Amino acid sequence: MELIGRQQDLVGIQPERRPRVRGHVTAAIAKDICAERYASGSALPRENDLCDMYGVSRTVIRESLKILESKGLVRGKPRIGTTVCDRDEWNILDQDVLEWIGPNIKDFDILGCIIEARRSIEPAAAEFAAERATAQEIADLDSAWRRMRDFGGDPERFTEADVEFHTVLLNASHNQVFRRLSSAIHAALKYALHASNVAVDSRDEAIVLHGELVEALRMRDRSAARDCAHRMLDLAVRDLAAAERVIGRKTPAKPNRIS
Image (cartoon, rainbow, N blue to C red; front, top):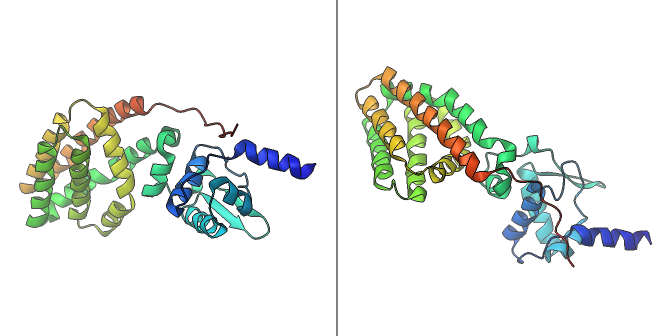
């Protein structure tokens, strides 16, 4: 009777069968975790049960769990099984994790945290870049800015240029820590900029401010460069509010059930 009861419980939480591709299975399990179908601290179903639920082999499940463990979502222990980690342990700067979190992103306040990080870094990076940027780096910033201007009506291509602009800016500071941070926060920065750029009706103010920053670097004006960075971040805060209204807060998802 206990075995029958356990099987019924598994049926109650099992998601729909996913495509038989490891990447898709990894994403499917991750999204179920991010949607709280498997709560923090709870144990995932056994490997055999996961095989049945997702329609794949044990090898695929094991490989998927290794990927999830490397990104901090789960932890496997011998004779205990795989447990869902607390959200504080998740690598939220990872591009895959950001995509898996998806519509639940606001519950993590990632956008607000990114703004705080940028406020701590970018004004100083802009000031250093005004003094240290090479002619080529300034030309690269100008190129990214021109593409932002040209693609102001296309949020996707505008964001690509916007991300490149801020990446080049941090590198142009010639501060090794800022350069490493640029790589670390790249995925999160891309997500934040995309959310803001899609949420607003016009990107004209951002284009003007980015252009002013390029000019400040050309003139080697450290004070003007820092001021531009602060004003850009003030605009980002305003756009962040618009983005959060668009995203909205989602209620925790209920487990999928098969009738």
